[in-house]
Length: 390
Length: 160
Image (cartoon, rainbow over all chains, first blue to last red):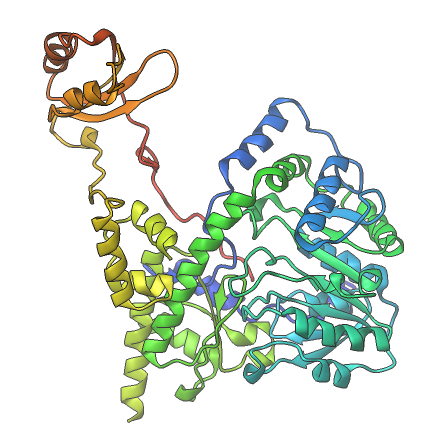
């Protein structure tokens, strides 16, 4: 028989932590700090609106771009929070999670050999989506000494005459790094000088702790060359509703909508009705969750400090990214041993790029009790490692 | 820091000082001082335990009583409220807007005990015009805590 598969797909390597997670699932009494989704339930008034839409029989497709009311609310929200002006009829596409927006955004923009700059460590889908869209990923390995921020110098050094898109994943999964206004201003200059586009993945924009999120699209001249991606999963604890959006220049959104309408038709209708309620009346919910995440973040930072594990202060998302280089183990070895010996699952930093080597991603989308227990076990583990070394 | 501290301990008063300090990102002595100040100012009025008595062998009866009263000259409702809240079996007394004046929560061992209190003590007060007693059949949620659900983490493993 002929090979049924496409080489391009087969050549993409599967995520290295699959096997690792398989062990966790089978291990009883293991504590996992590996999950990258909120531990909160979607606020009830939002769920209620979804239920109500079902009761009313709103079980049809929406338009391909998404409910007009939702697109309008997204524009209102971006105006209110970032001062950005978008036209709901021209600049917005509702997608199945932010992840669909990443995929179709790249597909809409890339020609063969176009280069996409991807700062790492970062979310795992940018590189495969670039390859599937026919582009060439160019990785920038972000540095711990820069608090995993992207600097203008690093960006300049990565740009070639083939560079088309910069992916800007801040607040960052897995490091928790954020980019403040002064960094964005420097990056903006380089972006305009070199005439490249930006895909700004701002899915964690509501979860920042040291300063309010600023979108790169607010920089002078950047709105015209930015696809802003966001969604409902993290801010409103709505991961399972699968709903996100992209805002950007009309010509790009138009082509993205074309792919979306042929591949997906439209985002789930129930989720869209619930999302309208989330944007209209969800600010207090965000604030409550943000406050609790922040308490856990501070708690973890203090505990790692007590243990003597270096960990820079993450300004956003719900992860801390401590350094484990002192033990002479790879992230993968450390995480595997930690799981075997103390039954705590964390994600090795290398799952997010080679520059994650020597780091662990620890999610604090867990209750304080779980975090306390897990951190106690991690402390026992690193004390044994240190004893063995001496 | 004060508001955040109150928000945390309103939900869980058993969190230790060192954990509170870590969660708030301040020193332990600051937390100790703030708690002492909040107690002194009468903002923190007690540290109670939320018990679902239905799950124990101890039988209790709780009633909500709507009370209509005649406010007294110069004292309004305060005096009559005081006469009611001084009874130890009275759990709470609220002054409300609307069709009646005071909402009294009462806890007793038996139905008889509660009805005895209403007819002999509460109704007998000369400022009380009328009462309506509602017995609580089941508590679903109290102090923001749901009594009927189990909390399990159902999130599935997914590649981040």
